[in-house]
Image (cartoon, rainbow, N blue to C red):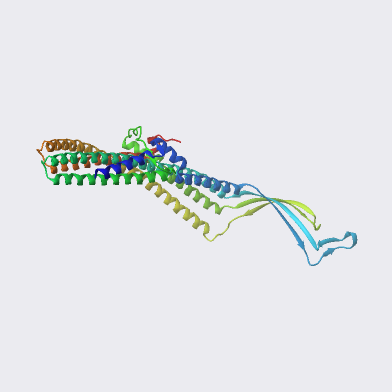
Length: 428
């Protein structure tokens, strides 16, 4: 049994020594914002929104077109005779037309569409901020999970030391004829159980490392450092709620969506207004009748008189979408407020759990120390030591788990308030 446990520990140590990348907490978060594919995809949406804005701006700019044609007619028709004759239908004909078109007025629909596209860029940027916050929370959680996994591996190693200590004592008593073989077998059983839990802890660490590698676009083994600084002190609940309802990216997006919906109502009303377009051009053609070349300029007017209720239906639909946007904004603010409430409740519960786990560890350590001393003095049984050993091992695991729960709960409070970048010290 000792040989198997030693082999397992040697393998574990070899894996630790082969670590290729050493990460700090701050370094992991900064790298996430630089290389994470989810963040990069969200940033591409900003470029898409900017291109859409440029496209809509082009609708109010002048357009210049050149149109030309070559024609082969089946016959030629001329007017007049001799040198004074004019071909009004030449057999081979050509012409070209250079035109300039400029929108003058279209019910301000293009301008409102352009304003909507600019808001669309703001929405895309807020979406980037929201994505960055979510990625930071995920990476920080995965990083702390790795730290906790390292802590759990250390706990299980120490638990193996407890089992080894009892096994050595039981073996000494058995060789002295003070106890039966049962005590030795019981200690060996505990040793195997502790080794199995160590293997589980190593497996959990590998899973946490895999998630962290995926977020940071890394390969190979990773070694993490315990965060060098604590998160800043939390503001009051009222201030956290104020931050959440005023500056969270999803709240800002909902406010921008309401502005877009309001502009959409005005844009649809513009279909009731006339459309004015300027057009100018230059024409040259082979046929000299009535002239071989000429220029022109004109204003085109289109006045809607009766549209069978189409515009009214469009306006009604846009008003309905505006109302939906108002409700969505209210719901988003309510959800932001309640997210803070829930996150704070989880944090208080996690802090209570950690405090109780630490108290449990102190009591379990005292119980184990006394039980083992009684066992070594042959005033206690191996069952008493086994029970106290199990209690101590469970208490150590509880402290590790509750520490992780507390750290994650605190991160989620900052995330719910929309201030996780300020909390972790990553500001772009």
